[in-house]
Amino acid sequence: INAEYGQHYFKQINLRMFNLARTIRPTTIARFSRACASTHTGQSYDVNDPRNARYIGGKQKEVNPNFAVNMVAAEPVDVVGKTHTHCDGGHGALGHPRVFINLDKGVTKLCGYCGKQFRA
Image 1 (cartoon, one colour):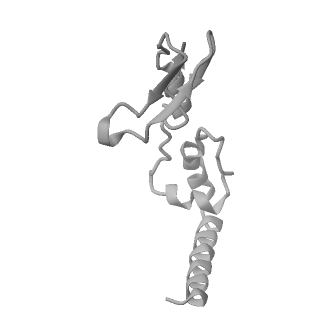
Image 2 (cartoon, one colour):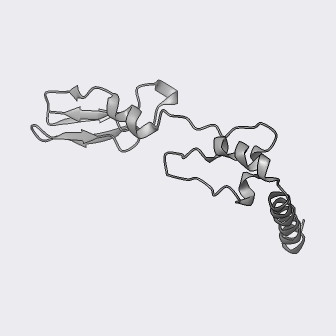
């Protein structure tokens, strides 16, 4: 498929979504209140936004309340007792490349890959 055809195709899809969102009845707009849940980045759309067309027919926007930042912060700090350590994700082949972390006394440092916390 050439680029010109692809651009034309996506313009048609966007136009259809826009027209669909414009023809929505006011009674249907009340159902969109479920679709306006905010994500961890604060992303939410206006009630009349054409991107809300995907939530017509009882569909809901599903937002995971367990944000990764909060889950990493809830992990306990590993006290190593040395001035250096390493982290490889701890799951063998499912982990990440081994990184070495220099530690200072009383300062918590994080692994750049998985966010695991270490302290000397």
